[in-house]
Amino acid sequence: MKASKFTDAQKAFIIKQGDEGTTVSEICQKAGISQPMYFNWKKKYAGMLPTDMKRLRELEDENFRLKKIAADLALDKEMLQDVLKRKL
Image (cartoon, rainbow, N blue to C red; front, top):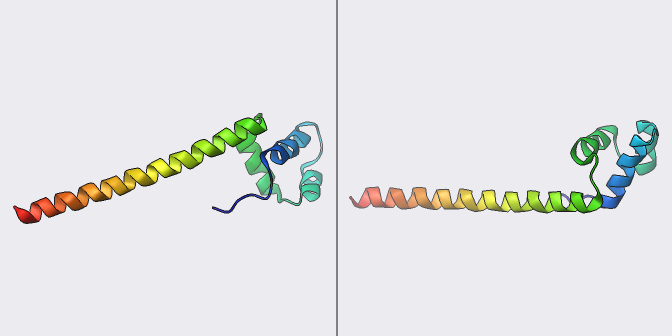
């Protein structure tokens, strides 16, 4: 996954500007982002502090890693069961 060029604090600041009444098009133009990106950030991070955003990202990364491990273990189990079937 491509790393964002915006820090969590910058994302929080951009979202906060929208909450304060600045128009979305003006915010996006100043920040150099698209409107869909702004709304995705708002949907995902609305009301969060930068520390909360960092913790969410860490949890998502850990979840991805654990899912990968579970998939590898399931594949190993399937291969071992296949080997056992061939021997019997």
